[in-house]
Length: 106
Image 1 (cartoon, rainbow, N blue to C red):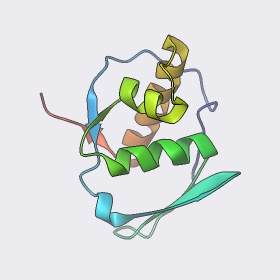
Image 2: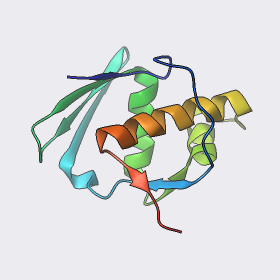
Image 3: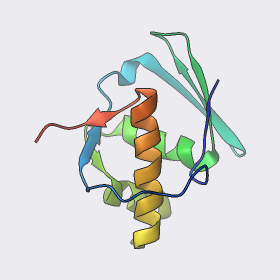
Image 4: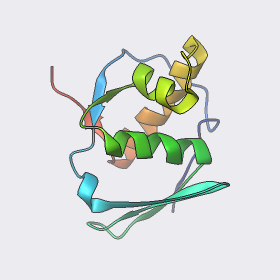
């Protein structure tokens, strides 16, 4: 089981882009106040997420396509700062490395 947290490493700048989850029906997400767990039906893997990462993945799974700015806005309920967007970008990169999401084609 791999833990994912927005504070796990410094955020690296990445070009803004759109993301989607092509296998959203394969994931079961359970949220709690102190974290979240994702179960991947296809692989049987379980992933522990921070509360913020869980909320972010919930947003990604609910939308056909998302960008870091719109996701940060949805999480915060107010316009995000550049730092907020970088933190979301970092989590999206983590989600991509786990195979949860992938960039949308241009």
